[in-house]
Image (cartoon, rainbow, N blue to C red; front, side, top):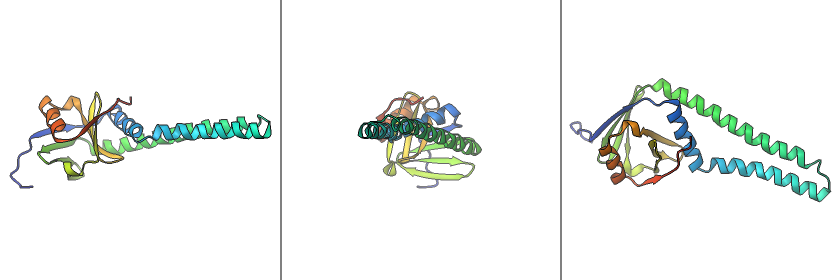
Length: 169
């Protein structure tokens, strides 16, 4: 990285709650969180049905089924609460500035500057509203399409392996 190097593209953005929610829920879905929660709930219900069949009494089914549904609901509620807390933390950062170079994207906030090299990218997700440049399984850069030029989108598609996904919200 030389000091005189000029970025190919510059983007400035401040995430809205809906953009952050879309990112968070898309990543959760892609990482299988929703399936794990549903599987956990079905495990409780299945265990209740099995216990009821073994002991020939449905009184065991109802508490285990209720426990499964409550577990699902409380887990989801906790995840949504954490999502809101994380969004509020992101809001303290304010505007995020991205500078794209041939081999990396530099991210600048009030907290400082970080260089994210394309060779270290975990995966890139694209839906109808944004690109999510994932540096790890649960950590990434939100790049709203409304802030991208057509040439930036083409650059991203030619520089990175992008996986199209459904929008979560």
